[in-house]
Amino acid sequence: MNSSPQNLRSKMRCEIEEIPDALERLFNCSNGAILEAAQALQKLDPRFITTIARGSSDHAATYLKYAIELVAKVPVASIGPSIASIYGTSLKLDYSASISISQSGKSPDIVQMAQSTGKNGALAIALTNDPASPLGETCDHTIDICAGVELSVAATKTYVNSIMAGLLLLAYWKEDHALLDALQRLPEQAHKAIQCDWQTLAERLAHENSLLILGRGTSLAIANEAALKFKEVCQIHAEAYSSAEVLHGPVSIVDEGYPVLALVARDASQPSIVATADQLAERGADVFATSNMGQKFKPLELVETGHPLTDPLLLVVSLYSFIEMLARQRGLNPDMPPHLSKVTKTV
Picture 1 (cartoon, rainbow, N blue to C red):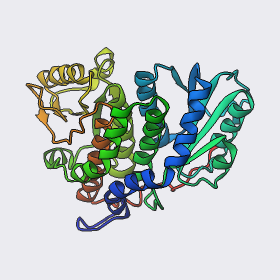
Picture 2 (spheres, one colour):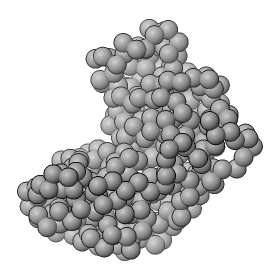
Picture 3 (cartoon, rainbow, N blue to C red):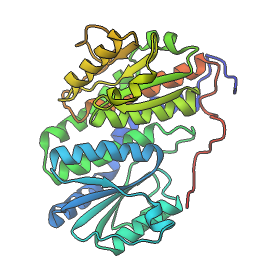
């Protein structure tokens, strides 16, 4: 266990507090590149889109999958990078686009898969924090997510900016002015999201070793990211499930007092997640949820954005702030997760 005083101002905390500025920077610095990629998508009118990513970047890709399918009505599927790097297989990708997401742009398998998609008919788009990286130099269009240097091992501002870049690409591609207006409000709203008070959940998890996390749609992408961060930063074994699936088997581990976190966004999925959260609470689980609609669970504060595709993005900002605080309260250094490094290069 890496001891860390509770009053430590960690790199992770500093980078979380930089998120509003990083979002603003993305607008100012990458608008031209995003518009060019969006115009290429308009010209192509893709039949389907593939994503290429790992870890937190793959959770960002899941978020964008739901957003693209809801707004553009184009199916999106994730490609395992090993299809190209290990198995050497070429896919039939005519009339499609691929979106590769990597904060470093240096992982060989991501780069190789992106190269393969471009060679086999896809319009290749990269979202990266280093446009001069091998990934950035590989793709037809490279969008600098402009998050700035990220020193903490746990990705925070790069995750948020990756999703923001993808949503801006979608908004320009489909000329969705309501989404674009909502995205322009996010930097200011992110300041409020950092301040959300989840201390009641922190007290419950102070000595806990396991946690179940629920989401659905875009909030399932946030649940997956939350489970990863609880593991790597707080040393809590957390598993994420869709609220539509958790009752089909995983619920068997939820006994009396078992902690459950339901990440509820203000979209069409809210009633179903709330119903499942209430059902688990009625069975005796200790359920916390970012909603005031339920009858049985403990509500958590959240910032509403006024748009169903941007609410979950601020939800993850509050989550990051909470996880960094919880790690320090558990006596851990959030900047030094055991056995991890900032850049992981897989083949």
